[in-house]
Picture: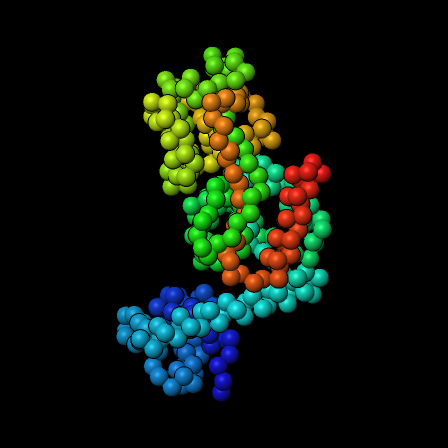
Length: 302
């Protein structure tokens, strides 16, 4: 007998559940069939992988090692199956692409539209992910490329400038300050503020806080939201004002007034980042198209 995918799936399920009955249910097998499969696996490996008692199942040290090693094998097999299916449909594969609120509210949708038109053989697996999480995900290679706020100087990461905004104030449409065409950050010092939450918006928050401190005040935070829709909803509801990126001008919204902040000239960069050692052919195709697209956009051609 040789070890096959059936044995690996059975052992993985049992390793997760540590219970023959639940693992068998998840695999849609009869419990005796699962027991037989595991015994066959142990016989082939030649060492006990499990310790069985009347109440529970535990992995031996050998079982823990075997589970860790075969989990990656199972993932590779699943990836091979998926890529084979892509090939049958004329697809080369997929790229895992993460984006932030600022990126998706800027020029990113236009780039994605053009890339999809030019490379229908590459599927983009898009996922929203805050900047702080993207920086970790790139290093762990759980994403291939990220569109995030700010820049990265990590030696394992490469980056490319993609977009940039400027600071703007977002106020309820009936706010007295909305009567002005241009504001300064100092004019907001006595206002209640709405901010993105600290866990997801920490980098942008810290930048805004630094600008406020330079003007002698710290924002009075009334409420926080996890995403752009939440921030704008709270502003519309009158909970406070917000400081945001001018990228929001690409998505006009009723109920708010967006005003430039003339005393803040700092650019708010959106950069593309990827792991330096990632040698994916698909990533290379993506980046070559991206460089051409950004050059056209910079010259006014797109």
